Image (tube, rainbow, N blue to C red; front, side, top):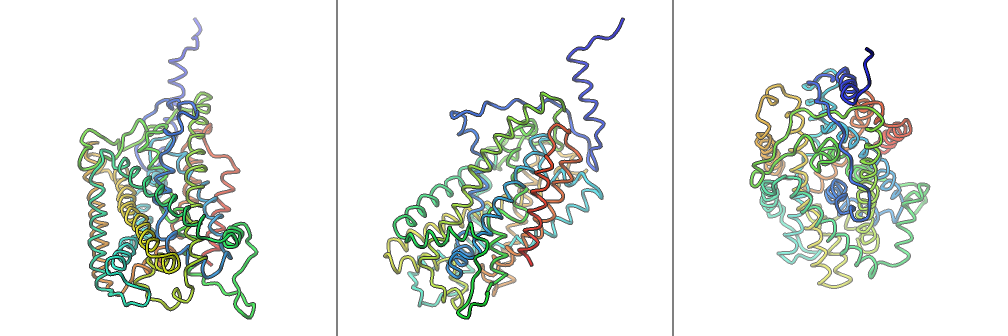
Length: 500
């Protein structure tokens, strides 16, 4: 009697096909169906706000508050197109690293570890690329603002570097303590960074609408869309501070290894196969949350293709409407204020231990003490949560890498991941304290420039690796198109040219 088709045998065939895919240098995935997404409707839009908002809130920091306004004040719109190109390119990369997690439940970093020559090599490789961005610059910049605000310093007063450095310790340790709370650590991130993003957006928008001239709006936004405009001196010669421009490119959007965190947040949000693996629990309030060591691969087939398209629409809303738009506006609003009020001569000859307060002081000198105080407060709202975010994503990145990549870690109970997370968070805090202690003459401003220039190196590596991982491991029905691959290569070429 001939065999008849039935759903069970078809399912078994699909599972067998996935199991034959070489899992690389880590254990094979479990296999399951890709969950169906909720319909993309207006009433579900609030549920879609997640990774993009966290990334947008995390990305508004040193670049937006210091590097962007400096560039706008010095060049008056020239070279601002780099911001737009960087953000557009990064949104393509973000959706590609998120693709891997939608289909496997694993962060893209785990996908990297599956490739030859193996986890040990890639952990060391990316650790060396990542460490250049570990400088605790945002806590130091927040300390500059606090000293200026509490002591009531004017631009002509002298600031004490020792006072700034001592206060930097306090701010940095507080940011480390914040990650202890919230059930899932991601929940605390979404609250803190979402609030930061909205407060900053509305305050800066108010200031720019009422206190920035139409001519400045047209000049700065015109530079965003005009790559032919170059900064020139009085003689007409092109003058570009490439270290400043490279740092601006590195801090526009996310940059460095920060983009890979988009995939981690998909898992924490529970989208796609991320809902089958768990999340990183906080130290207090997350006792029942677990995290699998290895992800769960979705089956192939036409049904998976259709469901994936539904999930990918979530990513398009999250990344293009929330993250890309928010990151661009979050960068451009401080740039408008900087172009209108920031004194260029103070940027070139001023004290680097007070640069984080320069925009607020120069704006307040024209518009009054109330706006000086409010803008200093806005700087704190940007920088302190930004440092908290840096503590989290650094610990999260390496927790995920070791949790899946180490055979010893894979033997741990799935509820023990928070111990590993807080071990890395504690190590990062120890590194930051050491940086303030052993590099006493290194201002937070200099730390920021170093980190921004180094960020582009890690970014180039993640582009190639993401392309390879998605083409090798994912079922053919959910692999990226050739157009997406071409866009990522263009991103790499832009990154290399900027660093030159």
